[in-house]
Length: 149
Image (cartoon, rainbow, N blue to C red; front, top):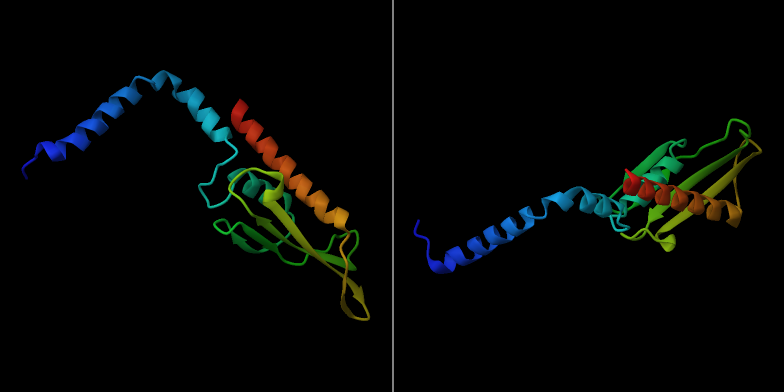
């Protein structure tokens, strides 16, 4: 294979760039911690902090669907042992790659046992809002932990 000046230019430019970056090696640890703490961490398709926080928040419930690329977590019905006549099902959606308050949505379904079956009941808006707040707070804590290491 014969190398021409036209072929060598991009290669030599990349080599020079690599040498310049090598001179910045002493800043590597600081840059890495800032990068990890960035609000836009998306190696899985959605914001990694929100994703981890959502999984942590609903981990006590059985999961039926988990899609990190689409940012969707669907739980199966869960009945709290202290109130076995009521059960909940959640769908958590991560909507953005950024760690923002409007990047997480929770939809909840609630059923109550009646006449030998389950009857759908409304879910209090405060319940859904509280779940979203818990997920956001956990995501912020994870991000803070990445900064302080």
